[in-house]
Length: 278
Length: 340
Image 1 (cartoon, chains in turn red, orange):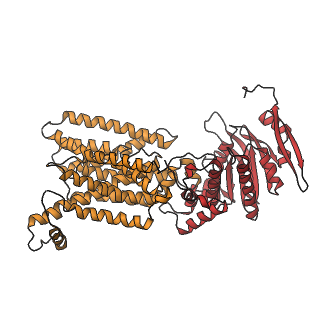
Image 2 (cartoon, each protein chain N blue to C red):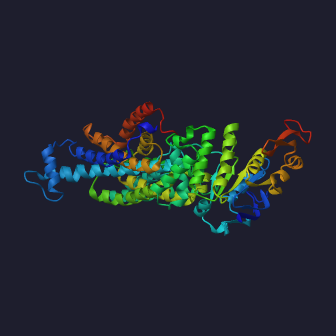
Image 3 (cartoon, one colour):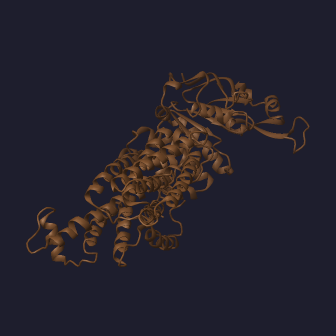
């Protein structure tokens, strides 16, 4: 059953230029949608619409059957959590204070999180393995640690949908794999109740999740529309990569004793362009 | 710096005890000497009836002069420091103070205008308060001209409106009568609690109490505003509503304080910083601490102001002279442990 449904979504910052031009998709419970697309294609803008940050101009977004335009920002945050790509550092809050902020949507405007919220925050920190960092200053953490704390904060929101914006940007191999593994185990542990939407630049994430038995769909985005949508191996092929990213790629099959999975590597520009002709 | 963070319960107790002890000590400070036994007897006898063997003058020194002044220092200091702390969070900038949105400049102009136009002190209060609030409203309206990045344009609005009112203050000084009005204006602009009385205290306490209580209620959401508009909203905060409530509350509290005390700089900036060094940046603990620390700090400074020399030293002069070096000392000790 679809947890979120996006119908004919249109959005523009200036009247002359449409950023989103009629996007349709739905994400079922227990499913993860990976969105690929070149920088500036409208990925973040679309995520902002799903998060309620952008007002939908035309079209409709339904979360759990409810229309987004009828929901307050507080109600949306009770249903959709967000793991942002960057965090602008200002005041140094402790890791625990940061995770506790995930409980805000469950407190009223003139109230602070209570004892129960504190227990939930601590539990979420433990679940991502960062409890030992609870008194550390968030601003001083490494990239991988920051990502896990932001994930714990999203978990504290207790939503059935988490939106990730390039969750593994700037991470090393192990931390990258750690985040992706954690995402897959979250969906499994939720008894296929939790859904995710992830903007990413790494085709191999989609292959990995699919191989983990997660129901994974992939959308290829360019210039405000979805060019292709479907299963990872149908969408992430050499033709589509050439069309959207203008690069030549090759998909390989890695055969192990108990598993087969695909991976993709870039080879060259497909349009014969030079390194400085982006 | 979690290790040095004080135990919350002890801190809470200190926040209540320190101001009370300081008020008690203040009752002894001044040119009219009173013994411990006398002060206790006067306090025991209550506000209305004089105790046995105590002259009416002594009774008046405690109840009509030192007590209201000490209480006023607490209230004004608390209002300025908690407003500064709240605005630092909203504007995500540790250099912000309570006068950011033009309250001080506006109130200053209102007071100057009243001093020139009327001889009645009540008009000074009314004008200072009204123009303080008006200045914030104008800054807000200016900030709304642009729709993007609301906090930046609000700061810009505050800077512009402050500049305009500061220019108007200079103008009133220029046209003021140099023998009567100009000294009154200058003294007012430097801040003073010398005129403290219960009536002023009661009147100013209304907006200050509304402001402080409002900030206290919404203080958790100041944490969220301080991590940025986008993240705050995805965490379920109606950012513009919260920001407006906080701006309104700080405007009420600051205008209430400024209209009875004149412009007292520095407290709204430095007290929240000292608080950040002690308890960190969580506004749930920081802002209540600001209430206690701001009040205590202003009370100490005011005691020094009225006892150091024959005449009164203007408050604004000493808050900076004492606060500045103290702040440098703390910076050196904690090495920016507040984490901003």
